[in-house]
Length: 213
Image (cartoon, rainbow, N blue to C red):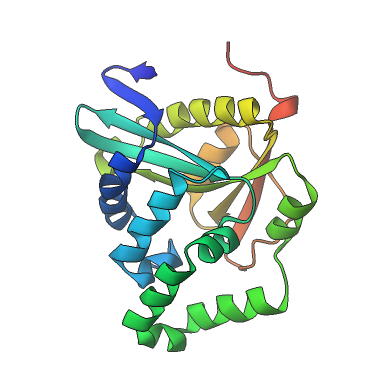
């Protein structure tokens, strides 16, 4: 457990999934997280996977019963793993939103993943000690308070415990706040491709970064 005033940071559990889903839709537009287009049922299933899979872990920041923020990390290319392990849920999302097959960004992503892998996917495939920061969501009234940095402390500690010594993060080029936050936490900009021209990839080498006492 960890405290920041009265805020408790703890591992995510199945009991948190509904609140994680609700916060997801408050924080992300489809541009920020394309899977949002598949609907609430799929996003709920996505977070159920994040809190239960042995390939992932999550942390929640809570004030009483209120969820202020959360983060998720995955060992491996989480989009591929998620859609493979939650295939039925993804297919149902497409069937109930058939117009997605004509959505230009969806078509672009599907074609890209069919024809080649991103630099991030290749890095994860060739570095068994690497993981990816999948999602971080912070409630609007808690942004800029350092809550993301507190969540990072728990993420870094858990990664070290699991032997995941390299941590990747994908950030939109124009998201200056997230880029500064990544750099403040020790992430370094890389030349890896994220599969999209409007994103950049950061890397944190935890083996070369002093652990918090």
